[in-house]
Image (cartoon, rainbow, N blue to C red):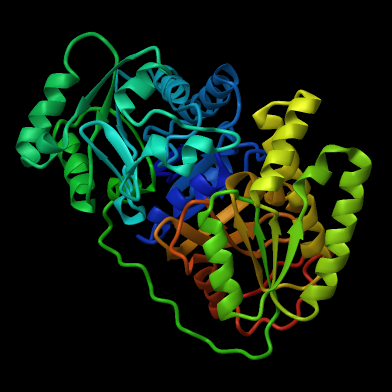
Length: 451
């Protein structure tokens, strides 16, 4: 067994955007799907990333899911664990930190959610996204996991059974020795603590890791992809892709299910730059079985025809009227936010899976953690081998296991990326697979050969 680090994430896109931080430093990184049973053979990777798929669960169920994964890792003698959390603080962060600390009997954890490259920073305990307080961003209206508190010590204290404190940006920027003493002081005593740490730049993140390492104690690191990059410093730079032009390539399938307004701009840029056809799904159709079946059949049939012509984006109708209709259905049917998100994601996963199974494609771009997870579940693979990064926090890799082994994938959280993110993702997939013209890998179990 050679595994250097295990990561526990709460959704698939988060698992991938953290895994790529290690992959681009030359570390063999494997992301396992939530349905894949952890085996000793999986620990041959340098870094293994597990998806608890617990972001939208109740606090009790999230604790149980993460505790069970952490206990398995501990039993397999994996000594170093990183708890990956959402950089916008969605999910059951407090209970999941408690779960890992309980399983490993750890006394102190550091929570560093900042991801400066994606404009997520923490200062004086307050978390900002694109310069706006978290509670004032679209995350506060997230249909499944809304976040309405920007002051992280308060947010976490309401979720965790442990004492929560924080280290300010002024302490971080006073230097390694000062910060190390501050950490030592706060982590002393008998009580178990969660320490939130401010960070506004990549240099801050590096400083935090180096200061903690001076103490040579076993802490639990908790954070986003930002801090993950600095947990290992191999000195290896990410290889630059060679651009390959091909006028005769297979199409790319884009599935975008996020309601974050960022995705609207990204789809528009994608359509402006490339000849990409679009199918818009009516999500309210998914809540009645007969209508759901008809909508899936409609979209798959139309998608098959459009993929014969070129690239395709399948997306949900994100107009305010549609969102309000879905909310009205939710109230009428008496279903939870979790059930709404699950129903839409599972239906879009079925659509994506049927399109991939019926047409040769160059690769797929999956936007929204629930959508990515549902699609990969339909594809019945074991996980993703992470290769590199399209943009900060947007990884690409290849599916492994099952009939779709080797299928190129890009996964992206809905709110991540520049306006060019989807266009850049499409270019990345076509760059690394430009020479792939025809391969019947779907029903034979033959690996998808693309490089």
